[in-house]
Image (cartoon, rainbow, N blue to C red):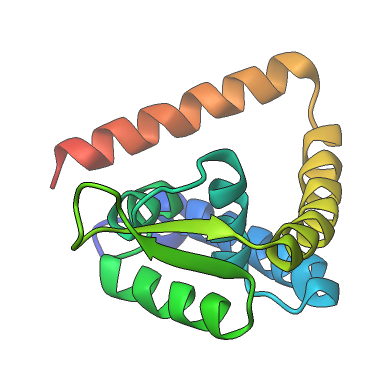
Length: 145
């Protein structure tokens, strides 16, 4: 017997919710033929054109090597373009192509449906409380690093 039963482990419940969210978003992104990490990169690139791969990896919550793989795959499909920074030649700026924007919009429509369905299960007050509680979880866990 362990010192903390599995059903009492908050992390298990968070992980289960995360897995369900990723599965729903993967299904929602399927018509756009992108994965959730690819979609996240496209979404952030729409918001922050020219962002570096390192900054993008932080926003998407993946490691820099993972982001480089994501960007390589997106570039091979013609969804993004990468050009050297005007002053920092070793930094590549990344931007959506027209096709990349169209793919992002298609994937985003599916992802927004998932987010809205999830939000609809909670009252406004419950949503605010849930966001607050998840923020506290992240804060505690970040402090343990």
